[in-house]
Length: 228
Image 1 (tube, rainbow, N blue to C red):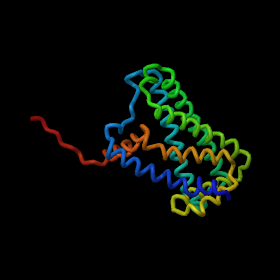
Image 2: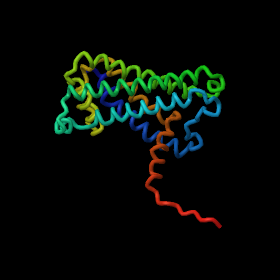
Image 3: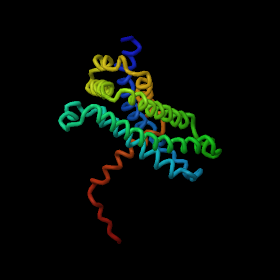
Image 4: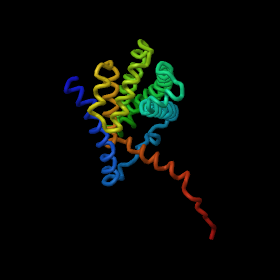
């Protein structure tokens, strides 16, 4: 195991997570007026609905799939009677469908952002960097499906699962050893995904936190409003 591999897959994840959480907290505390999604709908409405729906449905499904697929312990899958090969096939199928959906939506949003003058002029370099970063991450993720198709035994997938589970349980020193021989596309996809969390607090993505918080309104007590 090289020092570079150890850094990126044993230490770097914690750097990204620390900046993700503490950076978001600092930005909310110091720059609340920038805590927004900066919607471009008022500047140009064309193709926004289609791009937004495809992208958000696709990317949320992909994120949820990664979260459940990587962090569910292996013994749970065994107890459910799901083999490694079956889980890999499910991950490839669902990831391919929703990843492609997110990619199409993202390409529509990128086209709006870069080709509509009113939107382009009012966009910051961080807005454009974010879209391109997500694009590369998605393309790399979809490319790994081709790699996975070459070995349907699910072995490499279980190694990725063990890496992720060791990271979230603060066993980074052991985690890096699981993916020493992983394909370069997996490693690049993982690097782009981890770095996304690192740049998260400095972009418009912070509005995601507000989306989670707004879900709590479902559980708040009824407010009784009476006329005078």
